[in-house]
Amino acid sequence: MTIDIITGPTASGKSSVAYELAQRDSNIEIISADAFQVYKYFNIGTAKPSVDEQNLCKHHLIDILEPSTSYTAGRFFIEAERLIDEIISKGKKPLIVGGTGLYIQTLTDGLFLVPEIDQTIRENLKNEIDLNGLEALYERLLSVDNDYAIRISANDSVRIIRALEIYEALNMPLTEAHKKYHQEPKYKYRLNVIHRDRAELYRNINKRVELMFSNGWVDEVVSIIDKVGYNKEMSAFRAIGYRDIAGHLLNYGKDSIDSVKQDELIEVISRDTRRFAKRQLTWFRNKKDAMFSTSKEELIDILSK
Image 1 (cartoon, rainbow, N blue to C red):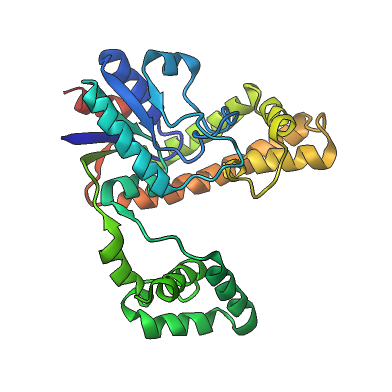
Image 2: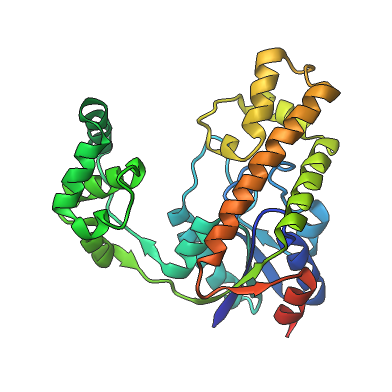
């Protein structure tokens, strides 16, 4: 069985396509592939499906975590496959909807189920960078896993540390570990991408950020801070815009966002969202198996057949 995925950059219309399909087919159940819609209370800035949309058909992996909890692509893979099994067993049709590329890639390509690694190994590697520089670590990676090292940047500290911690913990190169611990996906997927003209997409982003503020985004952030507090390292606050709003509120007070400051925040958040969308577009274009639709109507027509 092939499972459809609806994806595309932020503000491209993924949710409205899914909503239209659910109106046409009552058997559809939606699995969210969004890194931040999993968190409770974070509604407006994550463009979470509305109450009407969620009432129309069952949604999964939305509002399942407290904001302080971390969520990973590995956990998404495991939970999404479990949900697909459950939905199919009921005679329903699973539909994956979301724009988090890492989650979609993990779901379609499989999961690297490496054994748990002692965190002190990573900390020691970070300390080595402070003492000897990143170049020294990269040279070591070249010596123990040349195949992987030459495929990444010598300045990519995250991947260098990850490869070396795998080597030290498992006594094997990352390339070998991937072969040993890789779990293939249970299902086949059809990757459907909404590909809008960039100028149109950017206009949609600007309008949506303005609408988020009109719909009470600042009040939502105030409410979140009152409920759970604020820590910039908190996973949910990595969602675009939330740190900007929360930081200003905490520095200047809950009533400090006047019309002038709101316009400044709209400009900053719109810019950051456009940059994020540009990265998403690059990722989607590099997916060889992706099917691109230039409009919502075109994709709805394809998926309705």
